[in-house]
Each structure stands twice: as structure tokens, then as C-alpha cells.
Image (cartoon, rainbow, N blue to C red):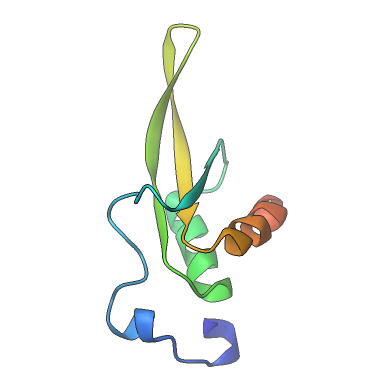
Length: 88
């Protein structure tokens, strides 16, 4: 973790944050007041595995709403993120 001064090889090689959402990642769609940058910064600081953060449009009652999809390769990181989302 970045806040503990540990070097993560995925960070060094730029492989940690992905530009696409792989099908094997565990994901959640959130309606957050936080921006994508705030979420991404929190993930970089507190978690270790690969992740994806990006917008998704949801059709509810004939209207599209913009939400944020957050996906993690490690399911336990999604659990930790879900418990902490209110504090981001």
C-alpha cells in the first residue's frame, strides 16, 4: 500500500489501473457524490490489486443516468471499498 511505503510491482510497470473492465473482475455500480478522481486516488492509496473505474449509463424508467462502475480483480478489495465508500 502506498500509505505504508510498500512498493507494488503493478504500480511500477503501470499495470494497476485498467482502461477496460475485464469480465472476471468483481464490480459494483455506485451513485456517488465523489468524483472518479477521488475514488481512484483512494484506491491507489489504500488497496493493492488491479482495478477499473469508469462511467456507465443506466436506463431507469426510460431515462439514462450516469453512474460510476468500480471493478476489482480481488473480491476482498471490493468488500473493503464498499465498507469505505461513504468516507471517500
